[in-house]
Length: 164
Image (cartoon, helix red, strand yellow):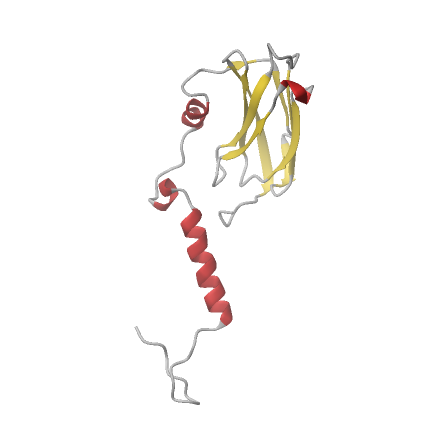
């Protein structure tokens, strides 16, 4: 397909800077989408995401607290704090804490690696949520077990609408 001819110069018109930037941004966004999303497949159900993270082990409820608001006005900034009951000794400690937001374009939100030197198994961060959904925290303990907590969040103004 050829470019339109400029009525002034009689030469092909070059695309505007805005058109070039918009086309490049669209191509970049498509390139980073997960293959499942590019193929139009639905996102993985929460149970599949948890099974992948825990390598098939079933996490128990308890010993972990997910402190997240039930209602947020803006999905661009959602404060969350996760605490796991653990003495954080060499023999018994939390290895990592993983956050999942299953309706986000990229549901694996964060993984925090801890060691006994952390002193406490507690992390705090700010999330972006695409829409109202369940946010899940999974923690891996040093004995090979996993614990889980989740919270439902209602978002009145969504974030991540553009897939980013």
